[in-house]
Image (tube, rainbow, N blue to C red; front, side):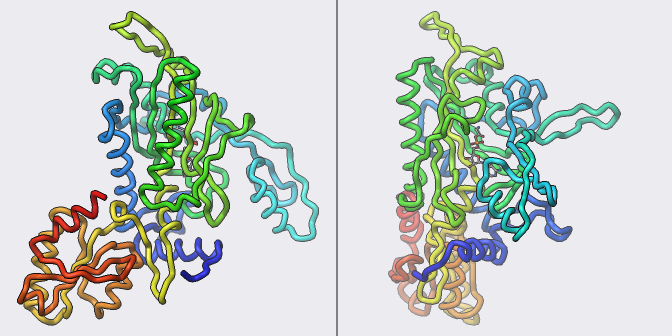
Length: 434
Ligand code: GAP
């Protein structure tokens, strides 16, 4: 493994993302827009796979969780009740020389800015709070109705609490899961997709009885479960840690909170937040749970796991990037890799090889995301697939026409194995369920 320093790793990932179609700057032909990104063909696959794996684990893998999909824009009263219009703010300070604003709680940005003024002595204004909610205006005639793009996907779950309870026969403890877009008017978007103004979240709101001991146990249980999920999909455990929030950094809704952090090229950074929200939200929306069997009524407490899909996509890419033997390889877990398999004929100008390989490719495509490649020589095709994280390449050669066996080459070990064509689907299926 070549020694890659942190700033060059970020440059390499950003350039690979653009070159191979993972992530592009949004509306690039018009100069882009700060804090917005578009996912290309491979990025969309990777991101969708992360969301699918999350949903499989959190919703399908459990009997006590149901999923919903709420609207992005809601009645503005929601945000008044949730406290976001008053308290969802970042503290900013302004440089008195050039009037640029930076987050008062971000020492790195402050230092970077001070360096940019070289010898000049900077004075900063007192911190001022700026709200992160993004305003939109609805309707076509004046006065237009002011509303907000959701700053967290969470409130869509709380405002549907009663609908879900009435329609789904769930009983405390139970969870409501959701994946979707959130929007924040971040003052300093940056570090590629890490801090964006439009991003996706994958969240579980888990409702428990209002009990200190039980809710603490549930909190600890979900911390462990979420950490294990990242490791099970290939993030190196030495690059992950928990960090408890100090009293002065907790969000306005949290009783206590712990972040899962990732050791990124720009320092240890928040990957996912695990929050004990107590009864803060349901109480503010004037909602409660009625247990018909026990004849009890109470406001449940909420344990939340809130991960960023874009951060996960970026951190999975960074963690899987290797340079070895002149090749670049993304050692992505096969379940999240954009393509599971690439199929090629040994020679692109031999019709019988091409036909056989096309036949195999079309059959595999029915059960997994496969890609076709007949450009250049085999070595170049392997390198091109390694760079986008394709775990296996299948080559059809002259021997295949005689024994109906193909060569499967493994991305990580570069080892090759002969497998019969009729067993291919099972061979891949077994590996993908690991
Ligand atoms: N519902 C709780 C909530 O929204 P948060 O800690 O503000 O909590 C949760 O956000 C996760 O959403 C973060 O851990 C991060 O992964 C992601 N996230 C938050 N702000 C983001 C941004 N500006 N860009 C990309 N991801 C972001």
